[in-house]
Amino acid sequence: MRARVYVTLRNGVLDPQGEAVRHALGTLGFAGVQGVRQGKLIDLTLSATDPKAAEAEVAQMCEKLLANTVIEDYRIEVLAE
Amino acid sequence: MRARVYVTLRNGVLDPQGEAVRHALGTLGFAGVQGVRQGKLIDLTLSATDPKAAEAEVAQMCEKLLANTVIEDYRIEVLAE
Image (cartoon, rainbow over all chains, first blue to last red):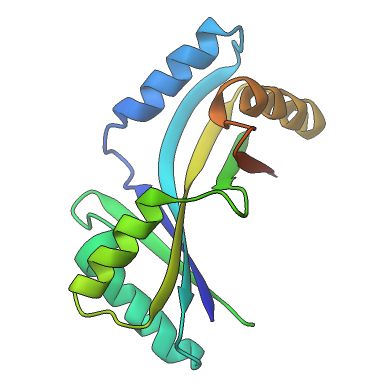
């Protein structure tokens, strides 16, 4: 079973990396970029076979390791095989 | 207009960061994790108003900066306002 986790900064949290990318894009001549927010995309291959159990386990992984829940949100997508 | 870019490592390219996460998850007691692949999620706010023009511009941004096209693939999603 596969799952995909989207980890994004919460609204209002400053994103220095995104700012750096925005600045670099401007330097490369891309003038129309008003904002950049960068997050993480984590693809997991799991031995679990039940989607519900897999989602619950991945949520635990997010809470403990994959996301910093103080400043980040996460969304889980379990991909049926 | 907003666009979301998904940057992922190509198949076959080693992912040391993913391996580190997999190892850490194992240490935390998550035994059923067979593989982890980590990528980037980039949300762009653009002044462009035409979706086609926006997508073409973002593709250029990916080719020049946002993705290392030697080892990474990218997928663009233009989000209608």
